[in-house]
Amino acid sequence: MLRIRLQRMGKKKSPNYRLIVSEKIKDTQAGSLEILGLYNPVAIPKIVDFKVDRIKYWIEKGAKPSNTVNNIFIKEGIISGDKMKSVTISDKRRSKIEEKSKKEKEESESAKEEEKKDSKKDVKAEEGSDVKQEVKEDVKEEANQEKNQESENNKVEPSKEKNKDETEKNDKEAEEKKVQKKNESNEKSEDEKQEKSEDK
Image (cartoon, rainbow, N blue to C red):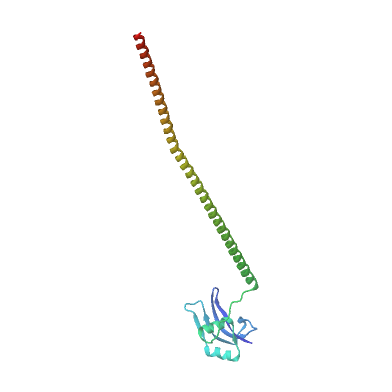
């Protein structure tokens, strides 16, 4: 089966390619039936020099382009169709990628769980702070009520003290009046006695 493929040429880290037609079984470096063009992706601008008529001839003969060459042909407009996946991943590399993706998923899940726990803690803290504020408000209200009662009691007590003072004053005045009356009665009685004694 014939295959249209790229044959690597050029220096190390500076590749350029030949477009060749060869048997699928053969290595690209083992020889080719025909060179169909040059491709240099490193150069600026890229060098794409294909023999379009020969490419179409070999495709008509049954040669199939490789995935990479197929994508280049579609990009250059030589053939039409869908692009194909040109990069293959080894089983070892695939397993590493899967492990990495699993680890990332686990980390993201653990981060989400931690965020949920933190949000729950924040909610509990807010509820606790609300309860504390309510308790503080209740304590303040009780303290205010006690102060009001004390102030009312203080207002009542001075009035009681005033009443006591007034009653004491009244009592003293009454006692003084009684003493004065006694003194006056005593004086009168003495005067009468004197008058009687003088009359005798």
